[in-house]
Length: 393
Ligand code: FES
Ligand code: FE2
Image (cartoon, rainbow, N blue to C red):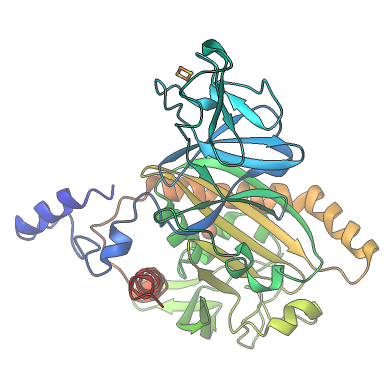
């Protein structure tokens, strides 16, 4: 899939007409190298409610971790006992504040990973204090446990600096789904931010049953802060393709297409926008930021996708729908709507169409087209973020 050695070999072998276009991602070398994700970021890994006193194994950026909760706090350790390499996630808790390996009972402190007792070597075991398991910084936000995957062993920056700005300091109600999916995380992120596909691939989604999607848009990308936005300059609901015919998503049972160009919501100009959302003054409804966070803004809620790298061939998809209710009552109403249909139509069938495409994607080689400016600008954003870090800014 992203086997660049193969891609380069193809390029060297001159032009193979079966694989036209760009043969690799060497224009964005850091991005090309990030098959297992970018280190130096926070990643959401599991719902908070699923992290209990029973250890749970997760893999992030190719790194195996064990998560456990003790005294209300979630901890993450490297999931490998230094003794003989058995996963610590196979063990359990024998003493408060610790995790014991299942094999010989080496017992590690959850806060710093220090070996504090060895059950099978007595209270004066001389190895105690001499061995340590790497620990990871953990935060809990949006009902999820997040882990910081360091570049080396640096302290984590505040997670608030990485979260979408509007989720820090505003009250919100949310619903979400997460699950492991096949395919590289970059294919998932590129799919999410891809300008071209939604109008066509998702035209059959029940989520869009009554809403007409555009046929094509003319779009440019704007950078603002940490995010890049897709900004629609033209929105066309019908087009006549020379020598081929006319095509539209409009059907008699669907809402009539609007006449104006709009940049919040993707089916028409909204009558009313939630005040918290309006205050953000988003230039476009689709935006993406490092390390693979998608934000799709609707008039009354925002949908986020987090593409968490598991390894080079798998990612964890997390979809979260957030509403900023003016009153408690409207928050309950949003959550009821989420459970009643958004969860099944949007986070289910609609998102399932994306999952199939991500699994089927096989690039590079790739012959990009005009709307793919969304992909190349996202790759550039990632490339620039790595370069900025290396430059120490
Ligand atoms: Fe973990 Fe022996 S392998 S205690
Ligand atoms: Fe999609």
